[in-house]
Image 1: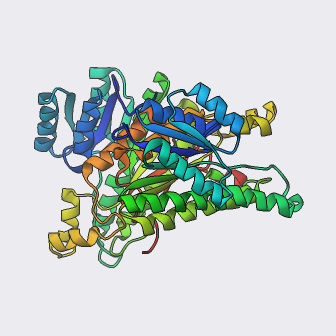
Image 2 (image 1 turned 135 degrees about the vertical axis):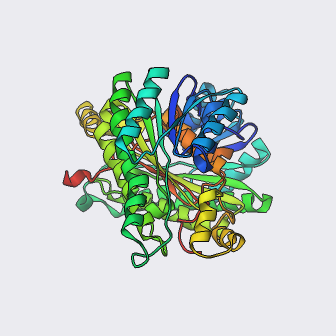
Length: 258
Length: 250
């Protein structure tokens, strides 16, 4: 039976030094993958790879700013040099600016679009030919519930995540014939540093913000591990006919109004 | 998948196609499984194919009395129901202008009313016990239009919306998700599509093939498992990117 395993697979994960990316790196390593951790935070990225190896997994760290084509090239070259293949690409790196269009600077706008969307384009165009040559692969892009619905003071973030959803579908159409599956994840609020960062951006207390975020049918925010489990499903052969989808993991937040 | 060992699973329309493959998958995961189907011969056959089944129940889901009796029998066979796979469904291929009232009523009765009867019966049991998962088979046809299946498509859109409202009302004790398969190579599909039609589908789906029933079964297993503990109130499409684009306009 096709289970959620990644035995012998090589997985590249961006933004993997913390949060959902970090949880996914550990989980993928537990399930047998070699994990290439990509992050611009060199200290945290190196520590992450070390911790995974200490726990018996296989992982390396390659520092990179995934909004730069040259950095993306360096990441892919390193992965190929060390492992000769890339089976899974988890385009997880992301940033958030909680602001309306009136509050955003041009730099804010460009930064969020570049990290959240352009990085997916820059990395995927390098990895797809590698996957195609190997007979297939799985690309998982990080979207959000706010890629499917709007939110307050979240203009550029919603724009970026909406773009991720449709980019995902377009890529799935283009590369299905190469047996490359492309899906995106739409988490609700997840307990990470980025969520606490949102509270700071909004000048709200972390506790108040977290308890607001928990107001959804399942009554809590998600854990990074739960989102990692969904990423694992999409990356694995258990999802062999799943492509072009936006997989929602949000405690019922998008189900409607209660 | 985590957390499925020992879970008690009732699957409607479980004697063939997606339902049968899902029964087999849950058995492989160590679950206790009961199949419900209206076809007594189908039930006998699936008992032969899957001897590890806790049992089968013959019932027509469009009849509330039969649904209640069947659910009571499933509880007797398994001790309780932790997961309902609300999968039983029929389809009739006909032009919209030629759908008879009897055909419309029949498709509604099984695909929407039957889903409601099973879901409500199971939900009452699960809410009383404090937990459960209900998974309902919709279809990509409930999300995008498709000629010759107007009644079927309407019921599948109904299943998706029913799923969302059930999720809101039954949270947090019971999770409710819908599965929307695209083209799956089942007996129902082979009965309705000629070889040329099957090939035409394969050409238009980005993955260039139909799904195997086992692939849909894997999604049901994932959604029932602990790995999906934060997932409720949504529809999960499994279609080889068939509906990723706007096919009619391409």
